[in-house]
Amino acid sequence: MPLLSARTALRPGARVLLALALTLVAGCERTSVSRRALAELEHVGFRADVPDSARGNAVFIDAWWSDDGAFLVTAHHLANGLRVWDGRDGRLLCTLDASPLEGEVLVDGARKRIVAHRRGSDALELGVFDALDGRLLASAPDDRDRPAALIGWTDGGAAFVAARPAGTEVLSSDDLRVLRRLELPADSSRYRPTGALLAGSYNDKRTVEQSPSGARLARASAVYDGGQRWFFELVELREMSIVSLESPSPQAGFASFAFSRDERLLALGLSDGLWLYDITQRTFVRQVQISGRRNNFIAPMAFTAGDRRIVALCDQLEVLTVDVATGEVFGQHAAPFEDWEGVFRVSADGSRAALYHFTSDTIEILDGPQARRIGWVCAYFCNQLHNPVRVHFELSPDGKTLAAAHRYGAALWSTDEDRLLAPLNDPALAPVRPR
Image (cartoon, rainbow, N blue to C red; front, side, top):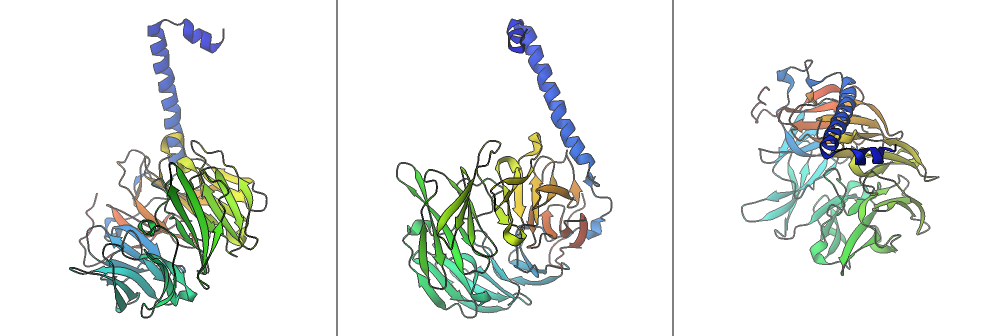
């Protein structure tokens, strides 16, 4: 007798018992999956190899690396100011009288400069700081109600890009003079680069992406006219000109951008898959349709070395690598069914991806080009049964170092070895209480 007929033939009470039994079996299978995954961890629960004295007290809620990994800037959840750390040994270099405005701070390792906002009693300023000693090198008043949105460095670090209601500006990083300005035909209420509307908690991409050289921007903007339509454009920052991109899929939602290292290709993650745009030919050359678990969108992503592959996040923490030449999915990594919610980061060079799983409080490290697990980082703990503490973390540009913080400490960790590199300690802050 077919299974459906057999179930239909059962009396109501028996059907309830059968359903309960099937639920229990499914639950046991899912639990065993998690336990098998956790069995691979060297540390389950609090780490015995790290003493309480090595718990960094500079617990942060946001962090930014310089492009060369020389500096790490953090924003503390209980203290004012930004803290600047040596990205290699974790030494505290200085504290800045500044704060991130909607998560925006620019850090230049080569010129040792930091751009951030300063809040006074009744005014707002844009400031340029020395990354080594925290000195304020230049400042300029900013609109408190509609402040400049910081985007990224350009002109080799001699200038940076900011968006304002009137348009996009290139400002000198020496004295904050406006070097170039472009009036953009966009609604001033949407001038700030925001998270894409498809963003989950794991999407750290914005509606503006700067190319690796800093020479151009990719911009996305939405128009609401009974529905939602997305428009895309490239802004050439040297000429301050605009190239409009005809949307490859007008009804699709937007999730993220990524530039290839040679800046020949622009990848667009949309709700109907991954699209590749040839910047030199000014045409879309390929669509890669992704069969996601629930949705088809492509969220944070990056090109790997040689621009051969793209590593990207799909729905429910599913990570894919796509071959650029063929459009074929080369590698795929799926999270356990019951542990698919979390935060995703990919390093700037595409070599590493990090998945923070909310349920199991684990940080999984993947090889970017292969979309294959290479290990874990137990940032003071990894524990299936632990009450999640919302780990904040950022990968270094080369993917080799993970800065992680939560209420049990803050530190730099090796992604390849799950090894504590350096706790982040500030003598002006209270020590972290032992567990």
